[in-house]
Amino acid sequence: MKSKLFVLLLVVFGSFGCNSKSTSSNKNPSPEVKRGVVPVADNDIAVIEMEQPAYGTIKLELYSNIAPKMVARFKELAAEGVYNGTTFHRINQSVIQGGDPLSKDDDPANDGTGSSNKPNVDAEFSDIPYDTGILGAARSQNFNSANSQFFITLKREPAFDNKYTIFGKVIEGLNNVRTISGVQPKEGERPVEAVKIKTITIQPKN
Image 1 (tube, rainbow, N blue to C red):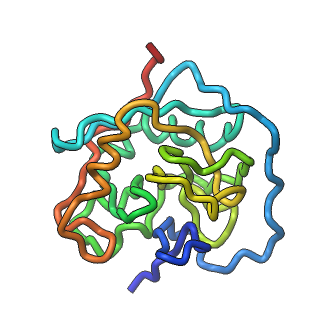
Image 2: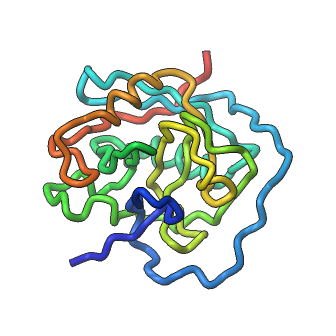
């Protein structure tokens, strides 16, 4: 059985599965934190269209000046259709998490353990606070293991600050994020009925 890896390990109320490319504990010092840089939204946004109409649309601005590598990866995977048909496989009081290509298959046990076929992305930490609606990069214990999975915060989470790459923020559809977070029934943190992403596209900002 594949072992679950974890993101947001410092949170006492739960952990969030990440990719499976690194299973060892991180032995390197914490990456440098980019400080005092104001996020500047890109000229295009990410648009998440959910398969179920009740979950609506989520629009996110992206911060290439804060996390250029992760934004580039997210846009690349969106353009290739990698996210289409994936699910928000992990939902709790802190985040909704998705972006795992393995969540497309019929085996819910592997959801949260996968990644794209591209190399991992190095940490791009900043001192932007993890407020409500922040878009973060999921990772394993290895700081430099972000890949395809992402999460959106539902509330202020100071324990995440300076420890997980921030690369965007919800600008429309936060109520839809909250609707997804309330899905029942669940097995642990995984919705029993798949909460599917129809598409993620990169579009010009209006």
